Length: 363
Image 1 (tube, rainbow, N blue to C red):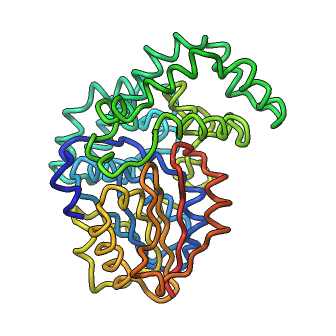
Image 2 (cartoon, rainbow, N blue to C red; image 1 turned 180 degrees about the horizontal axis):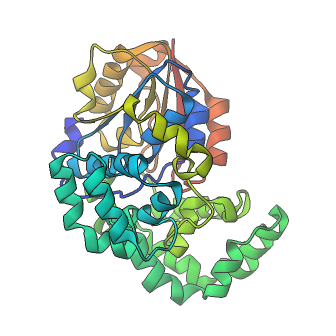
């Protein structure tokens, strides 16, 4: 993945939580008991979520040490906190004891010394926003929530959007009350590639982008507000309210807490490019959106490396935001495309900003 490693910064927390829907990821990968899984780590939520499927191992890799610190903090939190404490530390729920919870994880959670020092330095931000709110991307949404959204809608309208209602009522609410001229103008400006690149993602992530990000976000937002139920969408809750409340991502749901905690020894964080594991065999790959950061030649080369690491029947799942990536033509003969499945899962995807979700099976 050297194509992006030389162009983007990896010395900051870019994503303090994973903005990819673990529900569709697990439905795509269909991990079986005993499988070995390779996962992009990011902030760690989906690497942890994969433990629910009972794999033999999950290897969570990243080029960014701060991103792996996010995963290691979560591992420590699962070890020493109860479920309520985990949610408060992450920021999913309000809390007046985040400092105390953080200190306990740093003291008792078995974190490496450099990781504990890293989070100790971020203590004020964790207390204010939760460990899931201290990344650059979350800061971008905080600016939107605190400075931009109040110009568009009041609190009562936001609360109404997040209240359960039938699909026909959601459509009427969106078209008549939510999508006013201020909302449409804001989508064009704040969710442009320029603004998101400067305040949220790294500008290098848009090097190979095609089309208009704001147009895509506008279309996908309407889908998320009408076809899906906003009251059950954790990503939308955080964007609009700065917390998850009762709409939790898979890894944070109470019914999975004990299972994940009991299987933490199967999860291995690794500061490493994907190519390091060539020669090993994996049954499933959570590839996040790494392909869209690469030029076509680098993409084809990395894809070939993944195929060489894939056991027969292995599944690949990955997202595209602005760059249409599917199996390169040179490798198509080795791949079975799951087009109907990935279209269905993309329609269900609560992390609604992606243009595509791809599921492929190795022959």
